[in-house]
Length: 252
Image 1: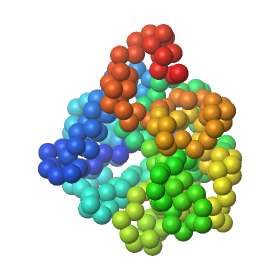
Image 2 (image 1 turned 60 degrees about the vertical axis):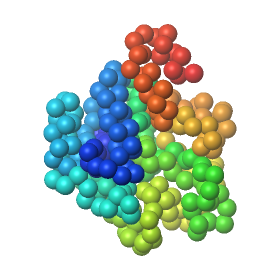
Image 3 (image 1 turned 45 degrees about the vertical axis):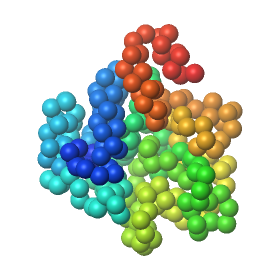
């Protein structure tokens, strides 16, 4: 049976540059709990305190490691997410991994999983950065999959992602690893139209204007169920959605 999964790691009480990031995640977890459109999901959780926290909130948490940090946050932070890919497909065979700040604005349709599985074994929306990420390409080096919404239905893919992670041997994000994998299976970067046809999922939309790759007519063809709520004001506002009129304003 397919499953939506999330991953939680790190220490809420830790000092340093990751403290603010983790506090933002805490807020996002609260917003998930208040979101009336949130479908069932599993959290793969690192750290016994994190595990207890989620269980106390009524979240289906699976303890992956008693330690909150299994890989160094300065050099391998996103290795935790790759582990969630691996465990998720081993348990459910078909998963959609969401970051905590990816939230639904309306119910998912009955066709949700069929629509995803009919497109490809792995999908993640294409976004752009102002600076190069994929230095092996000759062009579009800043175009890269967004790892906030990743669909996988092949058990071999997480292992292949881990091979790439280890082979690159640098401080990479999971997005760079996804980009290299998708380029490899496509025999090189084939451009944004090829990416749209093969790897761009339905149901998800970025709200960051400077990250958008595709023209509006393509984006409008999506059934935008999930949004990426980077802006704190937008995330807090999600808790105040109670009627169709407010929901309509959110979907604009």
